[in-house]
Length: 216
Image 1 (cartoon, one colour):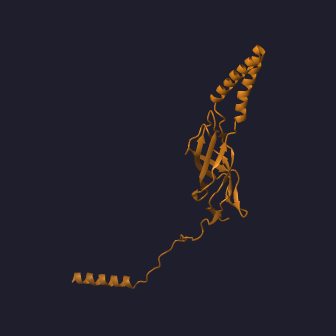
Image 2 (image 1 turned 90 degrees about the horizontal axis):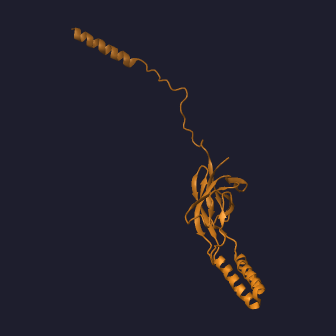
Image 3 (image 1 turned 30 degrees about the vertical axis):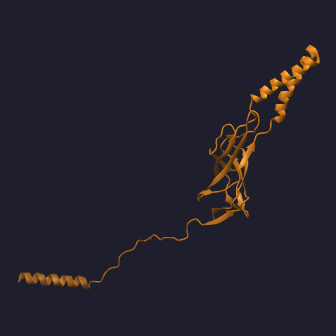
């Protein structure tokens, strides 16, 4: 009997609970909302082939101190703009490598250094590949100087020979002096060529490049 009474009470309590109205759950006072389109906005701008990048060299290079494939870097001296809008800010890093480094010879040839830039470190977009014309510098010719190095000793020898023993001795003196000048020229190289840090370069794009810039 007691078991039946307990079971009846349990059924009454379950029914009362089921009949009771459900209360609404509380919600956070500041829900997190996913905002679309609220981040930085960008647009693509194309720099056409022929655009000249004003670059200040950051790496010293030279015919006697550089090697082919040696990395070189530079920075834009001033901003690059298209239609009055800034595309590349001043200070943008430009990188590339040495394509030729030739020392002058003892008999002929002139010092040569050449490089090409292949990459832009574009702000907010990482690195961008570029194609540019080769930038090169050639040492000045020294033929006139070499000729003077030969003529001056020859003339001095001729003068000394004439004083010492007439025309025959003058000719011998000229030959001896000239030989000394030739020997000096053959034992020395021509001028080297170097570009130090801060050298101003005009780097021309040979293919268009598209850069993603923030919309202001």
